[in-house]
Length: 108
Image (tube, rainbow, N blue to C red; front, top):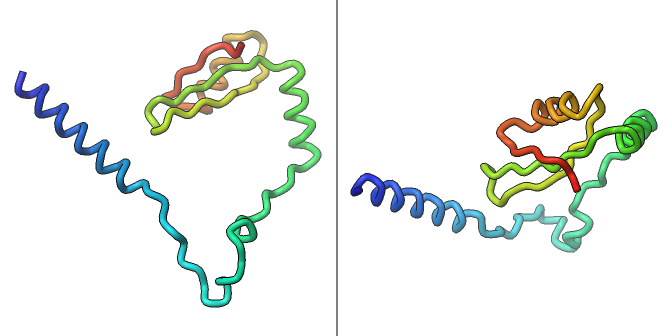
């Protein structure tokens, strides 16, 4: 019983230290960048190629959709995985291969 109590205390302290360290920090700007707003510091997102757009559209049309939940990462990540395959189980296996240690369920 003492082992469980000690283990619980260690896990609690570890979790509380991790949350405290995740506080947002103000970025240190270069001397000339003091007048740039925070929105201008974000880099532009790279545009997709035509091939990537066609592949994504094809998967959305004919693919199987699954919910992917990764509970081991704080906070729990939820995203959607769309894959094609001969059947649902093959598509689920492809999603499982891309998302290791995650729970995969059918999308609603």
